[in-house]
Amino acid sequence: MHSVPGPFSRSLLFLVVLSAGVANAQQTTRESWKAQGNQGAVVVGAAEAADAAIDVLGRGGNAVDAAVAALLVQSVVESGNFCFGGEVPILVYDVRRRVVEVLSGQGAAPGLATVDYFEKEKNGRIPGSGDPATAAVPGTIDAYVTALDRYGTMTFAEVAQPALAVLDRSQKDWRPNLARTIRRLIEAEQRATDDRRRGLRLVADCFYRGPIARDLDAWSRAHGGLIRYADLATHVTRVEEPLSIEYRGYTVCKCGAWTQGPYLLETLRLLEGFELKAMGHNRPNYVHVVVEAMKLALADRDAYLADPLFVDVPLETLLSKPYADLRRPLIDLERASLEQRPGDPLSGKALLGKRPEDYRPFAGEIRDTTTCLVADRWGNVVAATPSGWGGVLAGETGIILGSRLRSLNTWRGHPNCIEPGKRPRTTLTPTLVLEDGKPVVAVSVAGGDLQDQVALQLLLDHIEFGLAPAEAVTAPRFATGHHVGSFNQPPPRLGDLSVYEAVGDETIEALRVLGHRVRIGRPPLGHPVMLTIDPQSGLKQAAGDPKARRNARAY
Image (cartoon, rainbow, N blue to C red):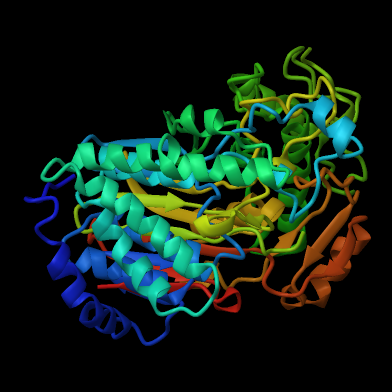
């Protein structure tokens, strides 16, 4: 990635021109939900975040600088979906090194978060929203710092200015306190004078090992939370290899088994054995086959996926062609499945013969997440799915903590059972797609268990049917509840299928004849954003579902 001189020399200029830059960004597109341009493109949740990101790109920042600026703004203006103390898995394509890397911006369960604790204090369950005991260690700040240090060009002070501008004009009670916390981080950074990388380290130290960590520890102790100073002090953002498979000549990249992302790859493995294009877009056979493949992969998600630092997840087999060949015949072209059917990758069998929640191999509402995709003129791309919701305000820090521990369970022996230091198997699952080693598609979706169901449809819309982002994000969608829920683990709705009425009466009736328990779903099913890059012209097209109030900018 390109470099810039003087880590603090641009800060004053950045502030002076911010307002003008935002105004220019707003003029780049007539419809805020879609945009295209040959230089840079952004598609996120809130309009203010889109403006901040395109402004950073216009000032010479790269995709990572712009993404972090957008994420900081989103944690303020979309705090009900993504909080400052939440989590943010990130996929980055680094054009300089020509690699995709994963930043695991997911904090772990605190040291006090044990099954014994929840059995004794919480009736054997991990509580719902609003309980301090559901908060994982905040993963966002260290993810930002790691991204800026590894790929970015700007200081934390520079990328934080748009968020501070929003905070300073707000009358909400907690925002002045959060502004004060951010300025404490900037003050820590400024002790490094002209050393940008050292300054970024000092930001992380201030939050995780300095006065802010002490404040969070004190608040948590006083209010029944489980986070302690040691949990914060030992937090680290892991930089990992993406998981990927080849599908129809494209390389599809996802985060690891601490997310639900691998099941999308498994679904593609199953689907590559069908002529989907010949079935017709959103025609009955197409919807049926895609849903039945998702059901099989979701059953494997529920049985096997968890933090691979704690359990031996059989990923190589789950994503292999031979395993897909074993499982594919379970898809009955004439009848919908009404059972959850995980496979047995450890024994090389198509069926395990147990419910996912009974498998012990080792001793919906959409106020949960938002979206962020950025591409710059040099070829760098960021796909992030930020989240953190339903949590609690940590006193005078102004930091809202999320409730991500709800994505773990208390089923002793299950791979995703809560343990100190374990990352929850999150639903957060950005996607990057390469062609001939270069990024051509990025997708991010908000919506809990819907995320990869919607992401899969957008990928198929583009790869199989040639839909552009604006067409894909507005096309009729479908979804199933035929899986264990990822938040407090409600049981599956077997045979469930929600579809948009726009798919047509003929398709809906045909799906019912096939045995699907069809419900008419109200748009939007999931909140998707999509960005494509033409490898020849460099044209970038970005779009987000307008019914989900997504915002795109480009120039």
